Length: 322
View 1 (cartoon, rainbow, N blue to C red):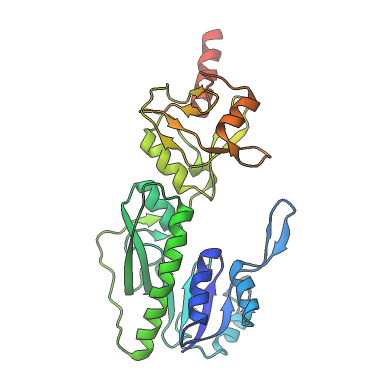
View 2 (cartoon, rainbow, N blue to C red; view 1 turned 180 degrees about the horizontal axis):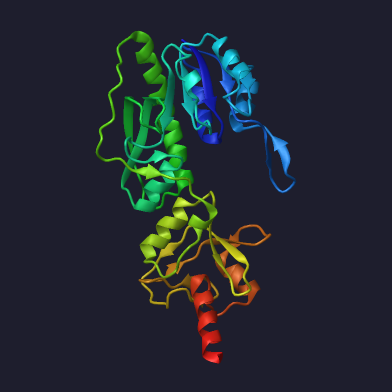
């Protein structure tokens, strides 16, 4: 089949690679416009665009798909199907019926669970033990279209969203190719999604990544792993600066919620249950470093309150002085 591949981030590259190596022909790639990245804020192509250009494939980077000229340009490609992996924008109604077999989305959950922008992160936050990937035909509703195929993937105890997404992107690429093969062979019919078991995966915002130390240790652990690498879990320090947090380790030690216990080799933070051990941390404006090295340089000792506990403690002191 002639394909228009739509995708943008690194997680979409394995599918593009698999399609290039398949029996199908990727005649063009649709991706988001170049974006500013890094401290220098220089314009850079999306990972999908970079790979497509290496392969000599034509690339479309419209700022919107609602322009009549863009619709006409895509229609002129004469594609049989448009596989989609994390493109980053909704496909407008005038384009839905342009490919013969429609727009076939690879979504990183077992639908109807975790419809939306952040299925991998939300699965980790919820403590799910199993997730997966689904291919389905895009329709007007958000991830509501009929399903072609699914696969499952076990969530490992130390998985970050980055780890899990990498695995799903790899195994999902095979599911996408097999779905397109079966569609071309005429042996696959989509099945409507069930009405029960629906959950929604809203985008993880920066504020969602704030660690609340009065939550149980398992919840702190889940939040940090779900927000690694993006948007990055964080807490606040006594001077008001943010401290980025890498994955933590649960311990059996007892430390008051939101307080530090510092030794030469480790930094513990109390939660509502047992303390967690910090791994790598990222002070504002600096590179990631070992938590013990950071605490030593910052001269933070036992009993230092961080995060919400620091704020609540300051308010209590103000009230006592009033």
